[in-house]
Amino acid sequence: MDSAQALATERITTLMTVPEKSALEKKARKAGVSVGEFVRRSVDFYDPDEVADWRNLLSWRRN
Image (tube, rainbow, N blue to C red; front, side, top):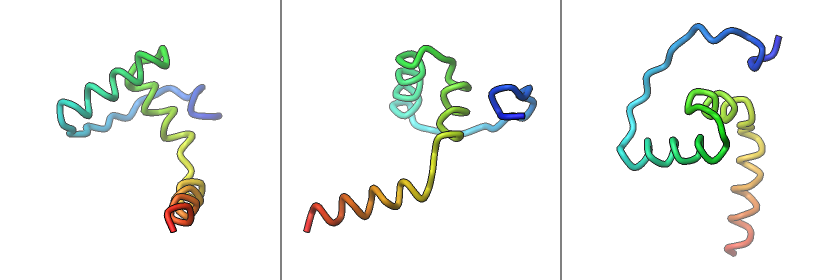
């Protein structure tokens, strides 16, 4: 069962600055979903290998 179909039963509390929270809420609104759904989708789509590839690409372009 993928996370979109599973019943959310766990809670995570995260501290952030006012601007960070505002940015998160703005992104969720723009995506048309709740903040919780936005965070869940972000976690599902995050790929650390892809981030490393982008960092390598960006560092190559700067040289």
